[in-house]
Each structure stands twice: as structure tokens, then as C-alpha cells.
Length: 230
Length: 407
Image 1 (cartoon, rainbow over the protein chains, first blue to last red):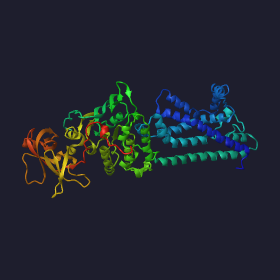
Image 2: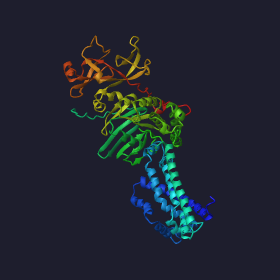
Image 3: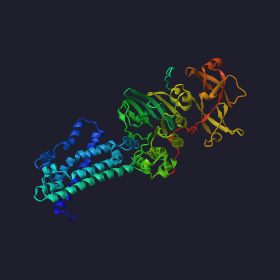
């Protein structure tokens, strides 16, 4: 990869880290929320459903702005995190991961929900009659059966997370080596005179990564389905 | 149908020692299920009735997969459900093995993994004492009983329907249940596969000292397996009792159809007839000659379960001579009941067991058939329905159970 400049390599590296962390951050929450939405009837279920999908319809800038308000240094969550855990989110890669996670959350929840709905409840009943309690059933039956869908969703969300722009630049700005991911680097290159070639190269990388992610997700789904014989 | 609906009658099981007591009431829309019965230990109680009569709802309620509106369930002296007291034991703590119609093997585990799933949880369960452990066969024994050794590494999707059910039965056994519930385990199999699984179910009944509930809408399965029958219709129990008594009930006709009506009873093998090669069996005070295939066990003094269909019995006032029907039994008419518009069902006591004969109403009139009349029953055909379960010595079930080596 000698044809990439060190700035481009750093943007690629950063994108992978940010997208990876966002997926890891999202997974437990997405599984929890999908489970609530699929398996539980409660007051406010429709509201939760709508809130989860909000990032899909809001302009990403708004999400970034809301994150600044809530998780910024003076925001309620941001101040609390700084005080209790000494963690800062603004202007660093963790903040970028958080912004990416919020934007990709609806994707993840959708993927997990679909795979949860596809799990045969009869198998959980069978586990129940064999002496497995609720948590046992979830961990040993439901989760493994959901796995193909969840993995495919995670890979898709990872690919989408590589390209998150609006929420990231609004929340954590555009700092080289810290928050300048692929799309931000591409944007910067376009702003600079003579950056066309660099922009084209970055665009090519983005396309390759995106396509690779989608193909990987499809391959994973097929492979795991075959293993279960469904 | 022109006939009046059969009068509902409840005859209680005379059970020396019962493992399970059930009394439940459940409404689902317009459907209402109301049932009360007991299951002896050991023994096989068939929950029998047409599709949609509430059999599966009832077994789900017993297993704890469905909650009734009201009722009480007690298993081995332990209350599993008592809506009046607010007691509901969750399904995972009821210790009831359930074999579903569609097997429900875990697709992400191998056959061995499926078995281990049940085995591990039973081992871990607190309160499973040494005596119960000895009463239940261990993993190797179960694998051997159900002939699963060649399948252990296979995945459920690669198994045939019959193999799947065998694995499901083994898995349920390995959960060391106090009761085994078989919910139409053969219903999704074709005839050949059913014949392949049935012997395993008979083996289960005879080898393992467990009370079993067998849910089915196939009367021939009930005939092969059950000791007692609970007859369900439209959410209510029409009758319950041992198989022989149930086979004589007029209510059965509406469920199994007129051609399947016939007495079921036990007979003892006397030996085989040298000339004809037929098997001689004792029934009541008389004797029958029947045809038995090679695979039937027909040793002297063995007990067989026989069925004589009502349409295969001819009633005569005096013993006929020079007639092709070989089996003639002397008996006394006990009842004459209306069968349908043109026919009657005549019950004939043949000195112990009772036979059913279908005759036309004109014949009833011409022969003057009435209760107390001595008659001859000519039997055109007898069907062998396997062997009834071996008689269990009375007393505690744990003492009658076979102890398994290495368990």
C-alpha cells in the first residue's frame, strides 16, 4: 500500500477503528432493544421504536449537535462521564465512535430484530421443558440461532460506519490523526487546491471497503445458514 | 347425523397409585377446555380425540407452556399449579419430558449436543437423588435403547423424520423427567416411518418405569401403546378408563368411525394348532384360533392384545354347523344399543371379556335379541394388536423400575 500517503493511511486506520468500536458499542444495546421490541409488550413500545429509528430520518448534523449538547463537556452525560470515569468524548476518536454508533444503531436493531423474529419459539419451549431457565434459554438457544443475522448486520453496520460524516464532523470536528476518518479526509482533500487525485483515491478505498463489507455479510449469512440446514 | 349426540359420561379410572392429577379449565375465544383426570404410575394414558378437541392445549397446560384460567396439577405429590393458591411452577422446573410432534431438535447442535443439553441440565438439577438417578437410564443406555450410536455426530437437518423423533425421545428421557408427554410424536411421519418408531415407543413403555401421556388422534397407535384412555371431544372429557372398557363405549363411534368400532381385550396364548398353523388363544372361557405373523411374539402363556371389530361378528341363536367361520364363542347378550339408523350394536359377554357385534335392526327383531339371551358369536376376523404392557407388581413405582447399570 505504498501508493497511499501517510495521511491517507492514518484516515483509513482511524476509520476502521472508529467503525469497529461503534459496532462493539452497539451490539449489546441493539440486542437488548431488539429483544424488548420483539418479545415484550409494554407502554411506550412504539415510542421506543420511533426513537431508535430517529437517526435514519434526522439530518446527521442534528444528531451531531444533539450529541454535543448531551455528551459535550458541559452536557449532562458528558460532565458525568468526565467526573466519574475521567472519560472525554469531544474531539477524540471515542467521540467519533459514539457518533457513528448512534447513526448506525437503527441498522443494527433492524438486523437483530429480523433474526430474532426468525428464531423458532418452539425451540425455546423445547429447551424450557428440558430444564433451561429464561437466561439459559436465551444464551444457549436464542442467541446462537440469531447469530447469522446478527453477524451479517454487524458487518453491514461496520461498512456503513466507515463512511459516517455529518454526525462525526459536528460532534468531534475534523482533527487529523484523531477524528479525520476516510470521509472527512475526502472532504478535506476536496477543499484543498490540487487535492483531486487524493480525493479520488480515498473515494476508491471507500467504495472497495463498502463493497467488501456487503459481500462479506452475504457470504457469512449463507455459510451460517447452511450450517444450520435452514 | 340423524342420531342424537352420544350422552357424555365420565367414568373414572380406578388407579391404584396415580402420579399425576390434573384438573383444569381454559378458555380460548369460543373454545373451552375442561378436564380432570389422573395418570397411573407406571402406565400409558392416551389422550385421544379428533384434531382440535383440545389435546395439545391440555398437554401444553400440563407441561407449563400455557397457563389455564383455573385448575390444579399435582405430579408425584408436588403441586405444579394451583390457581386458587396462586402457585405456578414454570415449565423448566416441572420435570416433565415433552416430545413434540415436530421433534424440535436444536439445529445448531449435533445429535450428541442435543442429548447433552438435556443430560447436563438434569445432572445439575438440585434434588435429583440417587434413587431417581438409578431409576432413569443413563446416556449410554438411552443411546443404545433408541439405537442412536450411528447418528451422534449428525446434525438434525440431515436426519429422517423417524430418526428425529427417536433423538427427541432420547433427549426427553435424558432430562430425567417424572412424567413423559408424547404429543402426537408420529403424526408428521408417513406410514413406514411410523412403523419404524412404534417399536421404540412400546419398548419405552415396557422398559422404563415412567408414567407416560400419549397424545394422539390415531386410534391404532392408542391400541398399540395405551393402558388407559382419556377420550376428549370438543374440550371435554367424554370418558376415561382402561382401553378394553373404552373400546366398548358407544361414544367412540363418532370419533373413530363405525368401521373401527370393536372390542379390545387380552388373550393368553395356549399354543399353535399343528394342522392349520394357527395360534390358539384363550379368551374368557372360550378359545380362538388366530393368524399371527412371524414377528409377533407368540410363546405359550404370553398375553396378547386382540381386537375384534363389531362388523366382523355374526350373532346366532344356536351353534351353526357346516360354516366357514371357524371361531364360535358361546355368550350372553348384555345390552342392545342403537348404532345408526339401520343397525344395532350388541354387547355379548363371553365369560369375562365382552364382544361387540353390529347387526341390522331387522335381525335384532327377528332373533329377538335382548339382554340375558344366550347366543353364539361367530368371529370372522381377529386382529392382533401387539402385547399389552407387562403387569407391574403393586407398590411403589421406584421399586418396580428397572435399575440401570452404570446409572
